[in-house]
Length: 107
Image (cartoon, rainbow, N blue to C red):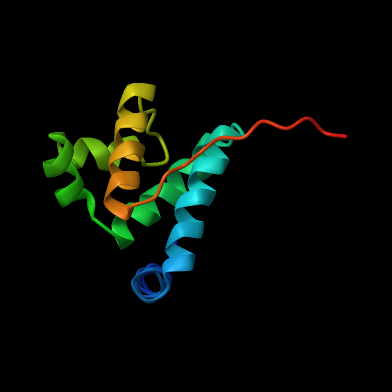
């Protein structure tokens, strides 16, 4: 099912008003990727990018075509790890956050 414009607008408004929600959305996208759910991770990060910096500004910042970035995060997109990590690093810098990975073994 396609996401409606109202849902996208709601996410964008919430991201603008609620820093905790914005951080959680970013974190969830990264966690999905690390868990191996690449499609969900890309979808969440696509929504995050649209609601924050936007693909045009992101493309300008990292010197990549916005259309190429949109394709990478689209349903059929398959971003190279180097591109994905460059984007994540830029988003971290933009947000002023640092993502750390922690290992733990189940009890």
